[in-house]
Image (cartoon, rainbow, N blue to C red; front, side):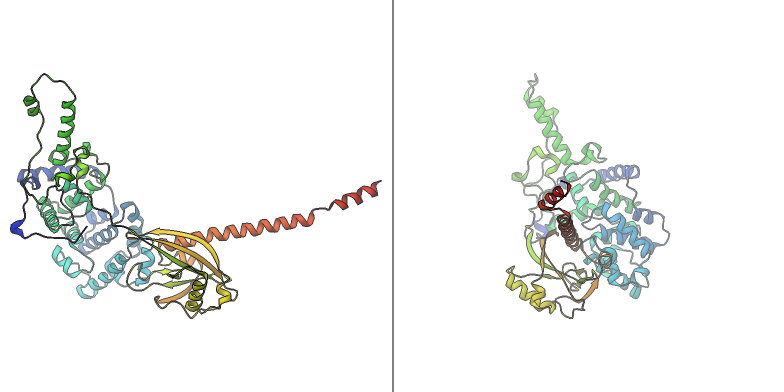
Amino acid sequence: MGKTTRKASSSVVIGAIHNFSDKEVELFREKLLSWYDLNKRKLPWRSIAATEADVNKRAYAVWVSEIMLQQTQVAVVLKYFEKWMSKWPTVWDLATTTLEEVNRVWAGLGYYSRARRLHEAAVKVVKEMDGNFPSSRDSLIKNIPGVGKYTGGAIASIAFGNAVGVVDGNVNRVLARIRVIGSDLSNLTTIDHMWKLADELVDPNRPGDFNQAMMELGATVCTPKSPSCASCPVQDLCIAYRQEGNHKASLIASNFFLKESSESRKEKIVTDIECLPGCDLCLRKEDLDERYGVHNYPSKKLKKEVKEQVLIIILLKQTDGQMLLLKRPKLGLLANLWEFPSISCEESNEILTQHISEFFALSKSVVNSRNFVGDATHVFSHIKQTYRIYKIDLKEDKQLVSWPSTYQSGKWMSKEEFLNSATSNAMKKVLKVVNTWEQKVKKSKRTCSDDHKDNKKQRTISHFFKAATKND
């Protein structure tokens, strides 16, 4: 996909099909909230928002949950949220802890810049606002680092009761299907229209519940691959669903010899709703496949090609089992997390030996004692990294004073310390490969040792001959 684009407002063409009438808005609110009251999932942040009297505690809980839920499934977030809130129940508690501790609790949740922004924002709220969250969407966006229009709308509506909408992936999908919006969701004209619809639809009496109901509908009913249209509370308002029904009805009618004329047959089938010529929100005719019904919406984006990268991992281990971990840079991928040293270089033995020797101030004889352990693979959102793992057992324990300058600092850790530190799932995969390899080596040595003992006990053929002679 290219850059986002916006047409001049005077040249934008949007047909009535992509909007709601006043009656439809009223009906939509009623049906959706009735369904939500009966079907909503019990989630800890919802309980806090519904029962907590302190508005700042409500805002804090909603804020933390929404940041955690960005690009992460609810099932994964649950345990992290509960652990986080038990450790830092208020913004004051979060502001007084260290980023190192925040990263440690966040470890494994991914997209680590979210944790850093939460901590930075908490410090700002406490120092500059005396722990009081702004109450409006615009003021939240302006004053809280890392809060955009969606998160600001969620906090403002759920915690403060402001009648503003939210638009995330789930809401986009619901609106795209209900109003047959087939244009590129990254197009600024489309983005503006989605927010316009969300703000118009939100129930002024229950804005927080309404926004959560919209997201719940997209997450549990109007799903990307297998939507449950039959149980959707707003199916009567969904044009994509109606179009799908029209197509199925057309197929049924075309397969039966009916006595009625073709004209009378047409009257029994609800015709497709036409839009304006050149509408900027309609799905292009060449992209519409009637067989797919609601699955035509939203339009399918081309997936970004995932880059592939190979890194050399050097696991240095002392005789007491401690391993060298290095702290990543303050910015960029996996910022401030601990990891096993990694090198991006050609994999020829000579060049690799030279790099390791220089980076860690080790003699080439020690470096050449390395063992290849195996590979581990981890896929991030935009890159697939393959870790080629080498292990060096140090004969003499010593505090290394050299490592690649790209790292902030280094530390020797036991296996338990490493697993409890701020580290990524990728590095845990590396350790798992190393543990498996070490177990195989130990088993192999034990087998060889047992075989050697058995060989010592085994009698020679001459021994049996001697024994037989004595008996004679």
